[in-house]
Figure 1 (cartoon, rainbow, N blue to C red):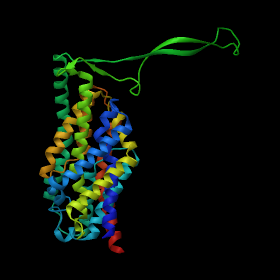
Figure 2 (figure 1 turned 180 degrees about the horizontal axis):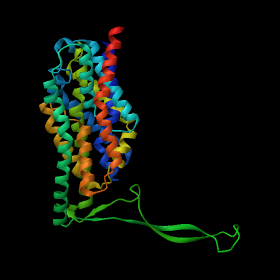
Figure 3 (figure 1 turned 45 degrees about the horizontal axis):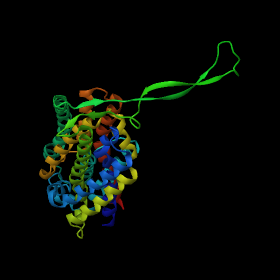
Figure 4 (figure 1 turned 120 degrees about the horizontal axis):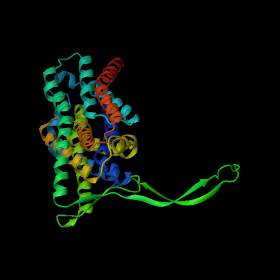
Length: 368
């Protein structure tokens, strides 16, 4: 039973490393907050979501224990739970090492299928397609199209109420080397000249001007953006934690509450210690953004994930959040096609890789 515990905690840590920063990626990408501050906010809100899952996410606990997908004789086997956790964790950690955001939900499903096929029990492919694959496939498109519809509406409303945007330029002195014509190389003179250049996001970002609800528009939108990032992290904790904790339910001493608390702690640690690479990809490599655009992306992601969780729908926070960023990049221009293609390739590889790793882990476990 200790192997189940270790494997599941390993998966929860991997989930935190790959997923925790996704909720606050727009805060860093827009220059609203720095990385450390944003990561602390994400960790706090994700952990709160994990704890609320004790009350609200019982259906996800049942579904990701394999209920309905494989027979009860398979889910009762401790080696099955270990294999699923190891297959999913190995896949997620590999993607994390490459700096690519992948879906723990997707990985767990692939591992359930791979280990289930090797286990030799009945596999209900109708349940797989209807209850698992369909929500996973639909959710990123819903997020993408939702963002593409909502952002122009927000932009039109902003302009109508007189909220503007302003950019800045960095103006300062620059030392320039000057070599007079036909002069020897040693005759280099230096002089100060005025330089004007656009600022990088670390030093200069786009601000909103005007009033919103009687308040400073820039401050108000920054605040709403921070709150939306917190809500998105909360939704992720609520949706992801019970999926992982479900693997512990074969341990007699572990009920759903204990499993969720332990997984919530491991997820928080994974995010704090190992999320830098994926965080950089999502913050800076998909599309440039400002606070208002990041807020729009977060709102769409949060609504979709929170709506799915009580019904046990296995949507992937990764797919939804990235789908929203893809939509933002398409509607405003500036989407990084190369990065998006790499992310999509990662998603395609995730399910079969997790299945193969889980199948191999089950074969090894049964031979011991």
